Amino acid sequence: MGRPAASIGWAPNCPYNKAERRIPVKRNTLVITAVLFILAVFAWAGWANWELRRQAGERRLALVAQGELAPDAAGEAQYLSPLKGKPAPEFALEDLSGKKVSLASYKGKAVLINFWATWCGPCKIETPWLIELRNQYAAQGFEVLGVSTDDIDRVDPQKLSDEKKEIAQFVEQMHIPYPVLIDGDSLSKPYGGLDAMPTSFFVDRNGTVVAAQMGLTSKDDIEANIKKALGD
Image 1: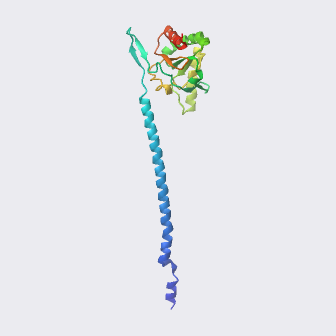
Image 2 (image 1 turned 180 degrees about the vertical axis):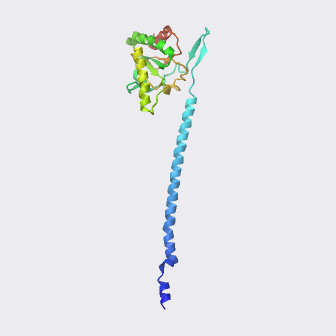
Image 3 (image 1 turned 30 degrees about the horizontal axis):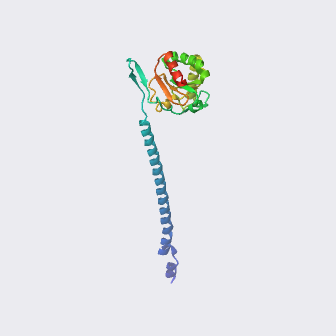
């Protein structure tokens, strides 16, 4: 008589209780699976958007024409810039104090954008000419922007400090009075490739490139292009 009573009260073997326990487990599995799927979809969509933007950027850069040297009528090498007659590409770069300087802030002035480097021998010959011509024509609304193409390390603060000191030392030794900006390599693509130093672009008061020079030319050539930029 005792055994049947014990069998009736043994709840753990009841099929109803087993099913009751399995239902919440299945629901939790479905919820987790759905959440993981949604997260995967968002991750894929983010990657796809980044990839499309990257490819679009590469296509835009590929369309940028490159400057080149070609012989003129006299057989001398002449720099042919795809920017001549077009608006100078806008930019905003830091000076040695960390202040942002933009090309747009010189609107209404004639500007010589001079790309140079501390390691560039011809730049050391050309710089005194630029200083003299800048001082000569400044009263007429002319300015030089010296853009250093020396390597800049944005990752290592100590290296960045050392690199800026080297540029500052060059500026001090040459007694450069005009603004000097850093990280010029970032402008290589929009300015048609900076394959040789020095490279200069002469921009008129309307922001249009009227002349360009690559390599060491002469003080007279530079002055002639400054006059073009001034509209003389």
